[in-house]
Length: 160
Ligand code: TYD
Image (cartoon, rainbow, N blue to C red; front, side, top):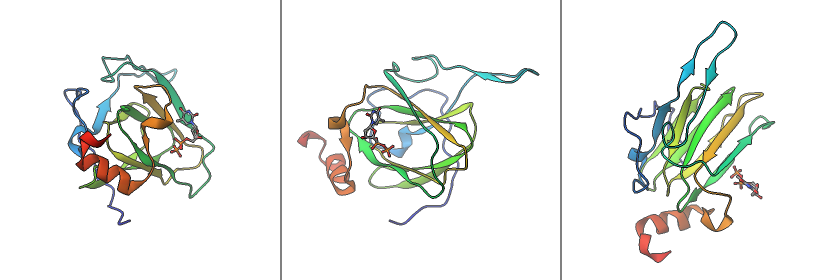
């Protein structure tokens, strides 16, 4: 698939609601609080305040070998905030019409991904850790693992 160049994601002033789905317009960067200190920096995340959902699950990707690709799926209803806790990686988002590549490399910014977005992760730096805060428990039935099925579901939201 044609890969877009790295661009800057939009920054949100107002967090998107649950009804905002299926468009890159509803995906973007959330600035997390940062307490800077000579002893080291501290960032915190509160559900409903810094992420626009109740956090039901946290998972992280680590020990990712060079050249590996993760993701490659969409979700019917999952809402996510992706943070590069350590190192860096790229997130490719696709809403079936547009595709964008964002580079994440800060532990105090999160990329919010609304439902019905195709998402791929690659270009992991050595030692990087990708943290995902998720709005739902793990549910394989919520996954769209085939791109054409994802596009079809996006065009025909009533068929699920
Ligand atoms: P998957 O979502 O396919 O990973 P990727 O980020 O590459 O798309 O998940 C890989 C495996 O881990 C799969 O067997 C499902 C399992 N898994 C869970 O059991 N719970 C989870 O919260 C997640 C994210 C994955």
